[in-house]
Amino acid sequence: MAKSLRSKWKRKMRAEKRKKNAPKELARLKQALSMDKKGEAVMTDLQEIATVVPADQIKKQTDVEGEGDDGKMEMDSKRNKATQLNENGQYPVWMNQRQAKRLKGKRMAKKNGQGKNKKGIAW
Image (cartoon, rainbow, N blue to C red; front, top):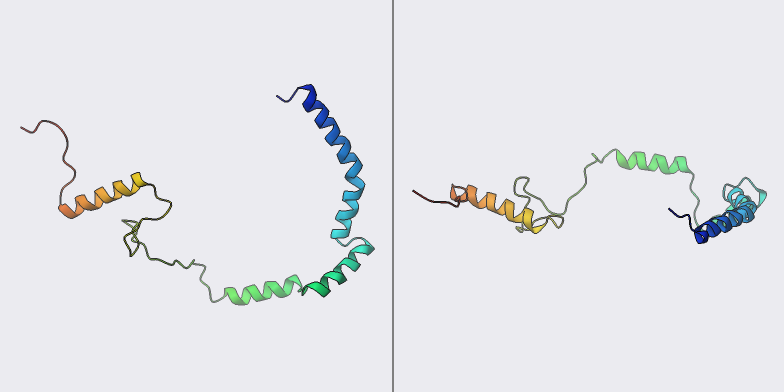
């Protein structure tokens, strides 16, 4: 697809625009990576605005904080694994009505001691 004259022209113009902007983009990238002398000046301006902390110091802090944590996520409500109900009798928000109805049917069948009666002729 995309073989019309309009799309060919737009592709050509985008390629020319990339060629034109490539030197500016490269200079901006070098400045961001502080490979240029101008990058150091930007870094000093940044230190005035924000607190600059080395990466190894941040990593040490996360290691110290992570030792007490066992990696489990805290949940606000406790759910029953079999019924998926929380303490208020609510299903999870991601569960659709059909799934909730099916689980409720299973729960009621278990409570009453029998399953749903099959339709048909009873002899």
